[in-house]
Length: 261
Image (cartoon, rainbow, N blue to C red):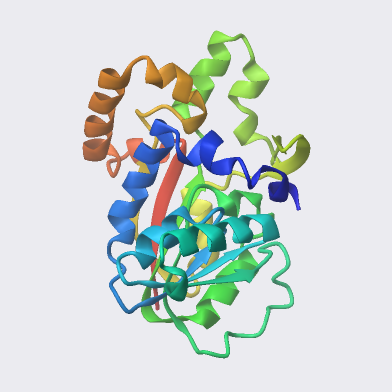
C-alpha cells in the first residue's frame, strides 16, 4: 500500500505543519456538529488526527483506511491520548467497494466524513455513494473534503516557474500522477458539481465551501512560515468568503456537506 511508506513520518511532514493545521481547523468547524455518543464513520483516517479530536469530545469513531500502517499509527496515538475505547480501526479500500462489502453488523452509523483528499485516490465514487447510502441513517450528515480541480495558488506557483503543465495538471482527463513515498499514484480531481451528481440519488447537498482559496496549500508551509502575520490575516478573510461564489469553487480543497435522504 502506497501510504504505508509515509505513515511513520506523516504527522511530522504534514499534520504538524502550520498551514495544514489552519486547513484542518476549517474542517473541524463543521465536524463539531457531531455530538457525544454519536457513531461516526471516517473514510481515509490517515494517522487518526480527526478521529482522536472527535473521540476526545465523546464521539465514537470507526476509523477506516486502506493502509495498515496508517491504522497502526491511529491506534498508537489513540492509546497515548487515552481515547482508544472510542476509536475502532478497520481496513477499508475505497477502490474495492464493488461488490459492496456487507453492512456493519452493529447497524447503521449516525454520520460519516472524509478529510484532506482521501477520496481523490478513488477512481469511481459511485460505489462509495451506494455504500454510504446503505450505512447512514436517515437525515445523517456526510462531510467530504476533496482536492479541487482549480487551485489558484497552485496555478500561480507553477506559472511563475514557467511550468504550464504543472499549473493545470488537476484538469487532465484521466487524473494526474502524484508520488507518495517515491511511488507513483494516480489522483483524480472531481468538481463539486460532479460529486453532487454522483451522490444525488441518496443525498442532498446542504453546504459547500472552499478550503485554501486565499490560504496557501499545506505543501507551501515553508513559504508561509516566513509570513505568519500575513497568513493569519488571509485565514480570517478566507473564513468570511469561502462559502461565496465563485470563491467556493477556487480552493485547494472544497468541503461539501450532504444530508442522507
